[in-house]
Image (tube, rainbow, N blue to C red):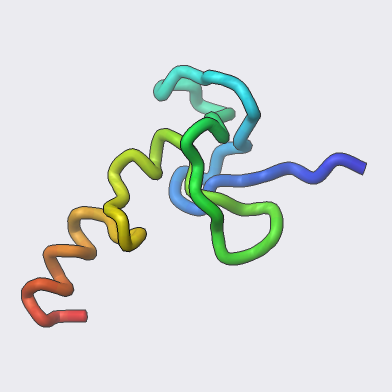
Length: 68
């Protein structure tokens, strides 16, 4: 049985191949980061925005401002 891997951010199915950013249904596992549960990840397109601590730019700004 094959398990679908879904991106936590964009909610698209992640495939182990290059996929254009503007594809409405699928995304890429190339460059992806692990999610919180089995079967989920941060896809390669969404993970490009994350820093070394796994924060997106807006989350990092909130941490630096002392809001998180």
